[in-house]
Length: 148
Image (cartoon, rainbow, N blue to C red; front, side):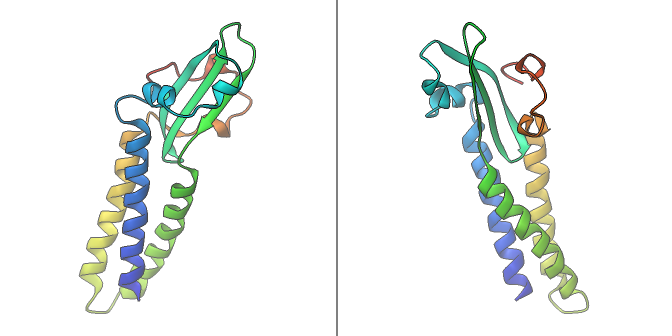
C-alpha cells in the first residue's frame, strides 16, 4: 500500500513538472500571448506586462494591462496539479516512514528521492518561488519584468 502511495506521488509530481514545462516552454511571455488570455476581455489594446514561471503554484504568471495603464488582468496557471502533487507529497512522506523496517525501504527511498527531485526540478524551472497572486498589495510596476 505504501509503495502504491509513493508511485501515485511520483505520478502527481511528474504531472506538475510536465504541466509547468507546457506552461512555460519557449518563454513565459510567448505562452501568455498564445493562451486564451483574460486580457482579451480588457481590450485589444492590452499587452503582457509581466510573465514568468512560478514554483508555487508550478505554472505561469501572466499580467496584462492596457496601453494607457488602466485595467489589468492576471492569469496564474498550475493551481490544481500543484495542490494535488503537494497532497501526494505529504502522503508519500508518511508512506515512506511506514516502510521503515520493511524489505520495501530501499525501493521506497528511491521513489521518495525521485519525488523530491521533481520538486527540485520545479524550483529550478521557476523564475520566482511564490506567485505574485500571493502579493496583491504589489502594484504591477514592482513585479518582475517580462522574461523574468
